[in-house]
Length: 232
Image (cartoon, rainbow, N blue to C red; front, side, top):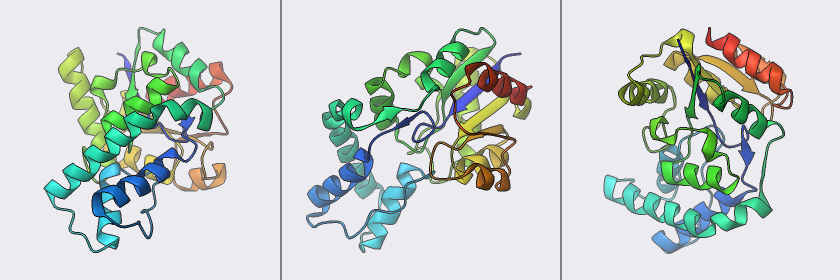
């Protein structure tokens, strides 16, 4: 049986250098016609939730048409500024080596479970050349739902439709850097490997219930072994 490995993107695989916050503010001003007072908290949350909360904070009803217009503008803005990512941001140490090692294994399928909408996720990963190691067709993204936990089963359904294999809790591993990722894995039916590469400390990730906590992704052999061990 193969293992389905689902990666969070921001602060797990890479750091976008603050571009996301800049673009949210830029798009809000362009679409709404006035500066944003604030952008809703982003860490560990979906673009649908961030956009909805940001609009509501400013007294704007996030109807389907408004959400569609706003998120399309976000994606277009990100695509237009994706060239800034390599100079503003970086991949986290060890991330590329782990992705490459897992991609070389016939017993692993890798994709993403991310708060980013699909087009923005693709922009970020392509900017750093990480998309080559991941099957983005089977991932679950930030416009697929407000909350993360249901996205685990959605990714499994997409994987089953493409590969003809079913994955359950013992063969699904989610890797992320926030308590939101840990909750998504546990409530969605996956084992969780948490990495303290974002704003949440290793101690707090343990308190949130992560099955395994790592300081970073630099020890390729250890990370691969723990991911596969968590998967089976």
